[in-house]
Amino acid sequence: MRARARLVVEAVGPRSVIRVLESAAPLTLLPRRGTRGAAVVHLVNSAAAPLGGDHLTLSVEVAPGAALRLVGVAATVALPGTGRSATHLRLTIGDGASFEHLPEPTVVTRHADHHATLTAELTGTARLRLRETLVLGRKSEAPGHLTTETHITHDARPLLRQSLTTGDPATDQSLAGLAGHKVLTTEISVGTPPPPAPVSGDWWSLVPLGPATAPRGHLATALGPDAVTASARLGTALAAATG
Image (cartoon, rainbow, N blue to C red; front, side):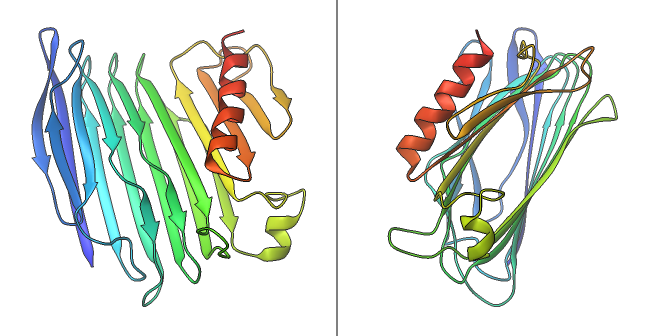
């Protein structure tokens, strides 16, 4: 299955208005009543996806001065099939715009082979908040293979480039990998006050993003044996960001 969905939000006075809303199963976009001038859209998987061989692309444009909150309503479950599955999230966030994406966890099941990419282009005083939770296998299940790539630029300059590959038991168990943890959660924030320096604790870390002389935000990362523990550790990391 190949599917492409598109969402465009523009500012009209104090309100953010959805100008383009193009869904393509299984990527279904449902607008909801916004708050404080921001547009709110729910992203629903209207079919079991991604299956092996699926290629799904969601493009989001938040025009200058607009605000958008994109919310997931159920976990994404990567399932095995024919070949590798792929999801692509492409973001363009204009000057003075704000985008917040808070999806439900992504579960990588046994024998799945999934590749997820995020590309974000920010301009000027654009703000971004993106949280991701990866669950490596269901209960008592070994995970499949997963590769994630994140590429974020600000005013055409690289801000964050990172990748993660899981699914090799030796690497996943090593201290250089996931140290045997089942859940990895991260939060990227751009356009918010960054920490003055990297800081870390038991199974969590917080690092500033951007040049040392003018950081633009932070990346918080936490590991845990389950989603509740990982989320609590991420909260500890984010608390460190606010002092």
